[in-house]
Amino acid sequence: MTISKKLKIFSIQILLSVIPLSLLFSTDLSAELVIKVTKGNDKPTEIAISPIASGNINLSEDLGLIIESDLQRSGMFKTIPRQNMLAYPSTPDDVYFRDWRLLGAEYLVVGSIEQLEEKQIRFVFNLLNVNLQSDLIQHIVEGNSDQLREIAHRASDLIYEEITGIRGAFSTRLAYVTAIQNNNSLIYELKVSDADGAQEKLMLRSTEPIMSPAWSPSGKEIAYVSFESGRPAIYRQDLISAKRQQLTNFKGLNGAPAWSPDGNKLAMVLSKDGNPEIYVLDFMERKLTRLTRHFSIDTEPTWHPNGDRILFTSDRGGTPQIYELELDSRKIRRITYAGNYNARPSLAPDGRTLVMVHRANDVFHIATLDLKTNRMLELTETRLDESPTVAPNGAMLIYATKQGDRDILAAVSIDAGVKYFLPLESGDVREPAWSPYLR
Amino acid sequence: MNYFSRQLYVLLTIICFATVGCSTSTTQDSSESITTIEDTSVATATVDTEPDPVPEMVEEDEVPVNDAATVFYFEFDKAVLNDEARAALMQHAEFLKANPASIRLEGHADERGTREYNMALGERRAKTVKEYLVLQGVAASSMEVISYGEERAASFGSNESSWRMNRRVELKN
Image (cartoon, rainbow over all chains, first blue to last red; front, side):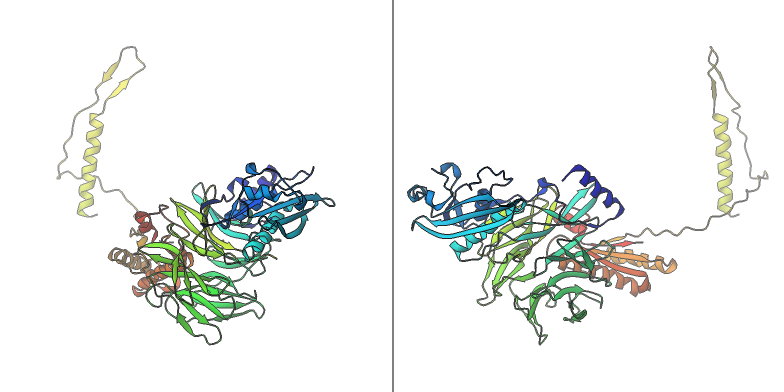
């Protein structure tokens, strides 16, 4: 971004406290998330990514390193360092399997990049099984030369799926809110980055709080709460065009938006009738339906992947606990009993693993509850953990936590075996929301 | 003219004369520094002497003052008013009944627990304050309730002393 563009954005900002910015404007790169792996899988699969041959094409990104970093972050792989490699093959024909066996590699990726027409590039890669000396997959990914990271993530997805049997989620994104101290006030920003924290883009900046970003199932829009009018209201905003629409303007709370799996409805919390209740807005019929009727707090609705149930937090039993509401019968049943604070439910894509914020011994952790076996598992060891968001493949989740007095993001695998931090270089980052699959 | 103001007037007059009588002045433009002692005599007034009449004065309209606390604090996950808050709100109620004005009650929570639940908790706290003021006779329509949950901390530390400052309702004009 040039300085003149920055100045232009700043001058617009003086006139308006809130501006939606096109995703074309990237923010300062130094503020991107930096990934630190703190705990990995006990028996990771060893894989070697031979540097990707690019001939005399000048590339701004090293595809091989991006793939390595993706696979390492999953915790299920250990990559062979380049300096240990005896050769840098780029096609299966150049591979001497014995060399790679000696290095301990179980799998090997070789590939090359070629320029197509103007700005179009093609990435051809092969995944080889070193022990079987066989070629598992060959795949071609094409894209623009400014989409190198996307091309690499797509390759990571395919490699990960071929080896683990689980669909890769490296080509997904994160939305989150940052708060940065500016003189005596806070500047709130709604941002979107790739799942690895790179390519951070600004969606909205405001001097008033921004909260609760929620992805539409299409991955093209985000609903959120903004206080820009002096009161909370729910908005939806398109990522590509930055076009946005205010959805609610009720007295009291307007919060916790959650899209239905089919994208046609939005569950939310409104207190217009006296106290916080769960409502559903039907976009097609433009109809608002009240689902709960209780004098206690009912909040944080989330949809079951089938779309037939909504889980939510309520303190109707005296402490915050998670309840399930069946949409047809409107029957409500309590789900959690262990501990005196269970809140912010969400379901993994299997519909069986409930993820929540759980307080034990005065410490807030992220926990899962298996709805079949009723087995609870505390996933995190950090403190003041909140806002868990599960990857669309159900393998990892990202949550907000504290490091000293700073708000940071951290990730943990659904079995608690892999952990890493995604701290922001400055300021506080909070309320992560993991996108659905984007294709 | 009441007795007190008359006494004050007399006293002020005496102090005024006495001060003038004691002051000295120094001339500086001369090569030799000359100090002239001014009249240091003191006259004695007696209550038998007829004093000058008290000058006319206009009394300013009373500016109503409400010095009651405007921030009320709560326990974790609770929205119960403590004695201190009740006493201050009683004072606000009397004041608002005598001087009707619109107010805004902003509810807040500490950072512990989930953000949307804390939004609801902040609202519950602000509503507790509103209901208490309504019971004391303040018009419900003159009060707006808004919750910021944990989004606008008063104190930024991640410890009990900060959390205590953040679990609050602020009464604003």
